[in-house]
Length: 93
Image 1 (cartoon, rainbow, N blue to C red):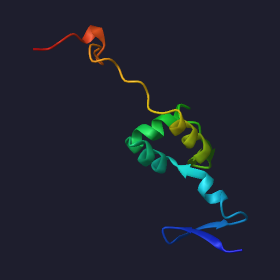
Image 2: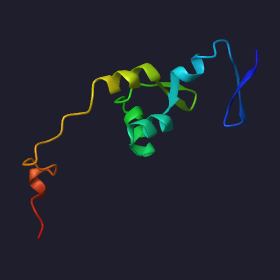
Image 3: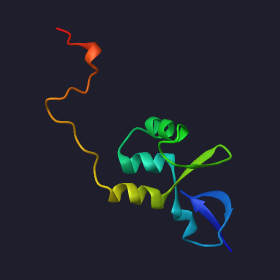
């Protein structure tokens, strides 16, 4: 068995199944796919809104979950007449 590498760096993982490596994504990879800041993705993972497993200090997201999210399609958009700001903020001139 050969050791898996990521970007040329030996990560010390011995491969049993070559496809298992791609079944899990880092939070940064999820952020890239979702086109959101990494900090937002980490916060969503930390609070459980992005399901993940924590391995030591590292979090991983199932590729299957991400593909399921994509299959649901885009989130519905607010109508143009609805403000995204809370009513108590009011308008500032």
